[in-house]
Image (cartoon, rainbow over all chains, first blue to last red; front, side):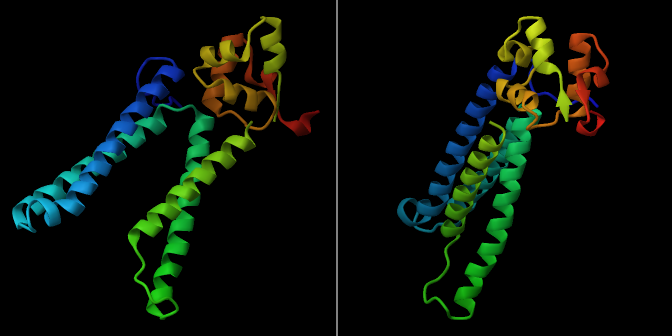
Length: 140
Length: 66
């Protein structure tokens, strides 16, 4: 019955603090992604060791971001969490279904270009954004 | 689900923000509960009952009861 609450502050302070943490982790992950993508080409000429280190840092920061997101969710109240869960479920579903279809389009030669993971990420971001807006409007 | 949160709040001259602070939820959540758009969990219902020193069923009623 006891809901796990992160931090003893009130919900406003808690959400603000957790949002800042999540933002910092997300920013660090974006930078680590850029390092892992562009580093081999522009900084260390595809040297294996720095590339492995870059990818390892990217993965570690990624897990830190996942943990920060979990803390962010746990710090919310139940309605906010419900809105987030619905938006995430929508994002997962749309990402899986349309992502698979997009990949198939190339396999069956209906499109001539190679599907990029960045297209899927953009689709998931937009879907999540729409899900959050829809959820907030429903409970207004 | 119907509830008497708005009435109980008004009796104490509390704002939604004050009740939200007491229950450790957002003001938007209090508004959604009061307007029947969101049903609280059992722990939150217990918390509200404890805050107003009442039974849960005196605050929250199923719509079919009336």
